[in-house]
Image (cartoon, rainbow, N blue to C red; front, side, top):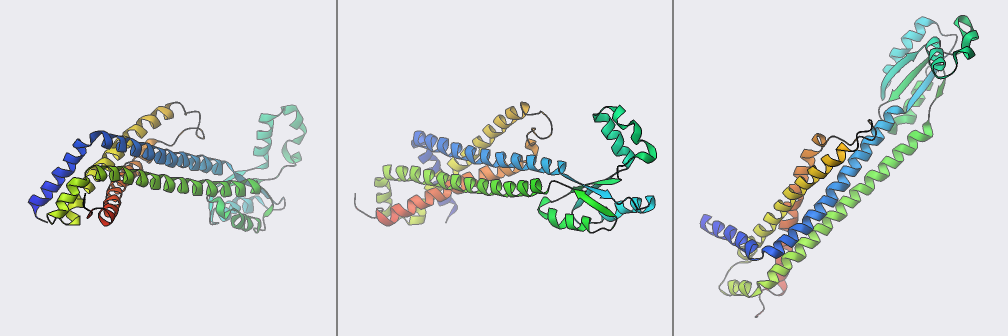
Length: 299
C-alpha cells in the first residue's frame, strides 16, 4: 500500500468517526463501562490476594522442644529449622519468655509460684511458612526433627485459606474473560450498525474495484481509535475512583488497599491493549461478515 493511500484511509477513519460521532460516543461509553468492570474485578481480586497473603503471614506453627534437649542443642535447632525449604522465619521463645507473655495477659499473681526452676513451660520456636500450599510437607519435616516434641498449628485454617484463594482467583479469571467477550460483542455490533448506515458507500467502492482490505481499513482505524480512547478514559476514571477509595480504607495492614503504584502499569497496558484489540477485532469481524453476506449485493 502506498503512503498516500495509507494517509487517505486513516483520514477516512477519522472522518467516519466524526460523521458518526454520536454512535461512536455511545460505543466508547459502553466499552469504558466494560473496561471499568474488568479493571474493578482485577483490582478486587488483587486486594483479596493481598488480604490472604497478610492472613498467611499471621498463621504460624509453634514447635515445642523436648525438655531433655540441652541449651546448646536448642540453640542449634534454630539453624536446622531455618534450613528447611519453605520456612520463612524462625523465632525462639524460651520458657521464661513464654511465661512473661502470659503474665502480660493474665494477673501476675497466678504465676508467682512458677518462676525459675518451677517453670513447667517448654522452650519453643515460632515458625512462619512461606507458601501454605506446601504446608503439610513442610510440617512433616519440622515434626521429623528429633529435638521437637510436638507441634501446634492451625492446619485446617491453612488448607481452607489455600482452597478459598484458588477458587476466588479462578472465578476472577472467568469474570474478566466474560467481560472482555461482552466488550468484543458490543463493539462488533456497534461497528455493524455503522457499516449498515454506509452500505451504499461500500457498494459503490466495491463496484469501482476497491479491494476488501481497502474497504476494511478505515473501519479498523475507527475501531482502533475508539478502543484506545476507551482504554485511556477508563484508566483515568479507575485511577481517580481507586485513589478515593484508598483514602477511606487505611485501617491497618489487612484492610488497607494495595497501593496503586503496584498495579498502574498492568492496568494501563491492559486497558489500552484490551481497547485496541477489542476495537480492531470488532471492526474486522463486522466488516468481514458484511462483505461476505451483503457487501456485493445490489442496493
